[in-house]
Length: 245
Image (cartoon, rainbow, N blue to C red; front, top):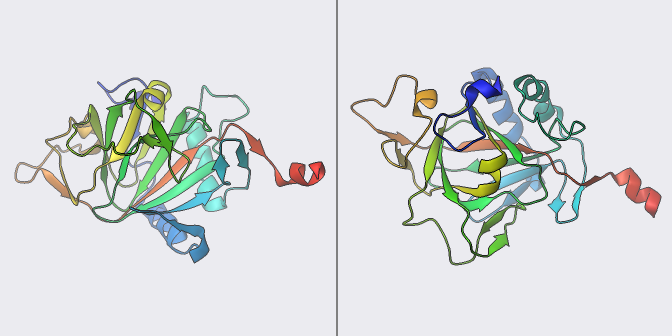
């Protein structure tokens, strides 16, 4: 399934699957996210997030089981071949970040850190976003609060044009693998309106089957929740920790 969902004219290994989940499934996931205990939320400068699966650092992750409302999607990932081509023992994700972006919030260009295998699968809920891609610059990087790598301090995407963009609609699945995972940074501009005629959006045909309306080329953002699934390469169970002690 995923091979037929490759975004035409995008760098290798960009896949977009519209309507990956149903509206009812979307609402059930939103309810689960919003009903999480308050201590589960981590508040960052421009968004808040939940961390499921364990805390990731340079040494790996002490693995925790993902809740059923997240792992229930794994058979669908396997059917679509999302994580195919990776280590045969690691075909399902073991980690998920749940990010909530209010209208006007975004994230600076960044790439996922080396702790993960080179595939990321993102399910979007409630609102769209335009994800912008930039070639990785020959500059220093810094570790972000969520374990990913961002541009060095003082660098940001304001005033820069992305090499290409993707319109990510609610209920869709976006998969980034291999080259685009390793060679590009991705970010979300802080704006409440997205002009669909700008930014070299490559997947308009898939994300807007009826095309851009003649009378309006902008989309107004609402609150968006993203479920970002990845595979942490190095894991350690709490059982092993207790044995070592």
